[in-house]
Length: 377
Ligand code: SF4
Ligand code: SF4
Image: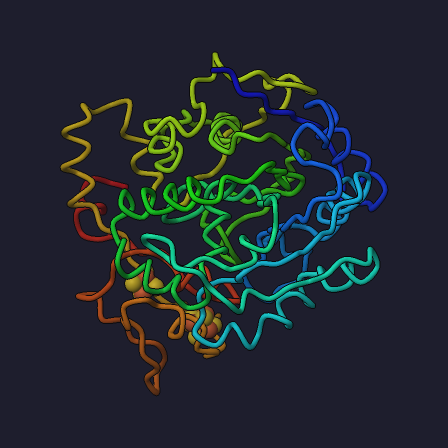
């Protein structure tokens, strides 16, 4: 079955320009009423990873949020905005700081919509999700277009991880430490939530060691929208210079029939896909080797190599401000603070790179194991 994705160019975060382009992206798919009944209760879920300013490029930009709020207001929806930002153990208390610094508090106040906290949970089979899913008729998913050291891409499917209640995100990282298993768990969440519409902030995207301060910003100038998150992530993979199924969540969701990853069956509205592609993205250190080798080696050889090739985090002692965020965010208790700096117990490390995600000053770097060095990666 065909899926539709709209691609709209948007050169900056200038308020009225973004609002017009968000509307254009939705209108290119037939308009908001094709996805959401007028006067519904809608949960809008941006990506608010850590307490950091919008200019960092780490979080969904508040002007994109404003554009989506205005589109939903046009059909008289009751709008609730919320996220469960990252997995730090003390983040529930810090959520107001996250909302404030990411710029969403101001936008919600100006637009007169309610900003909510994910304080209560309801258990599904495998994980507890916020009860705001029960309180609302629809979810509108608002991810940021970024690379990710564990999942390669974080966007339409991965953004829904923030709906997992509070610190249980750490437990899921611990339980699903293998990238394939983690991807399957993310797809379970997608199957459970099934957002009515996803609108991607791809105006400033991120490449390299994303998804936080260690990544590199790149001006991509795009807003991308659609109801099928699998198709959206497929389109973004192509823009990155990859095949859709290079992204483990896309591969798994497509296999389960949850969405479209066959580019021949994805109808692009707005801009032509070719016009949205510039140069390939710099991939995260921990996954770029796979992209480099995948066309050179048979799959079974690559699978064996992947088990041998290890990447691990270490701290840049000059950059590190000793804030302890990485220690709190590590699901496996690998990191401790010593008089001379951070110490890592690599026997317990699962290479999830949560520590890199939570570091506010890009002090966590990616090191290579002996085999990766041996084969020149
Ligand atoms: S040290 Fe970093 S990469 Fe290793 S388990 Fe902890 S958070 Fe994950
Ligand atoms: S590495 Fe980053 S997160 Fe960890 S203590 Fe240093 S500054 Fe904080």
